[in-house]
Every structure is written in C-alpha cells, then in structure tokens.
Image 1 (cartoon, helix red, strand yellow):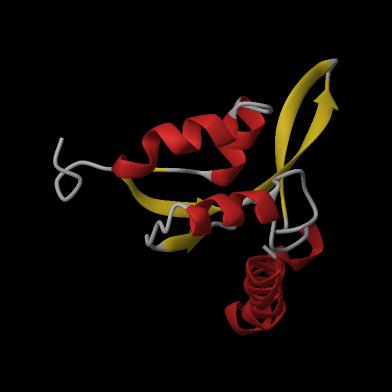
Image 2 (tube, one colour; image 1 turned 45 degrees about the horizontal axis):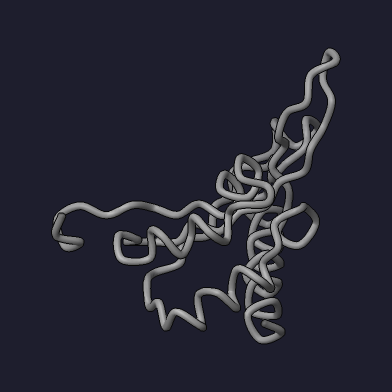
Length: 124
C-alpha cells in the first residue's frame, strides 16, 4: 500500500514488550510502512499473580532505546517521533491542585523525558 495513504505507528514499548527478542527483526520488516515512531518506556510488574506491562518514564524501563535508535539511523529512516506519556504524571495528592499548579509539576516531567530521548539519541 502507498505509505502516504496507509502507514503504521511503530510503538517502542509495545514492540519490545510483546516481541522481547524479536522486535529488531520485525522493525526491519516494517521499515517501509512506518509512518511515525511513538516513544514510550515500560517495566514488567506482577499483579494478582499475572505479569503485565506498566508504563514508565523514558530510560527507567526496559525499552532498549540505544539499539532502537541505532536501527533507525542505520536504515536512514526519517519519520516523526511522538513522545507518549502513559505513566502517571501526577500523584493522588495532586488531583485537587489548580490547573496552573498541576502544570508546574507536569512540565518538568515532560521536559525530563524529552532530554532523556535527546541523550539516548546522541549515545546511539
């Protein structure tokens, strides 16, 4: 299919959580159809005796961003990155804060992930 009309979003957390050892191979297969690259991190956790993914700040989880970025660079794949924040940005005590107070807490968290992505990109 024409990539301008139909493309896929190659999600770092889902790809590596669901394809622990095969994600790099699947990445190569789908290069031509990738339209965007959402960036997020995850950890494994056990809840009620079952293993599940828990989203985490960039660099605090299990996504191998250095290898991921190396593969992107090697393929000369130029696509937009989309930084996803699916982990809690505020704690329970913050829920009653004003919007302005919440933003004062959230913006540094968002900036931290952006800086971490930039650092990992440079290291790859």
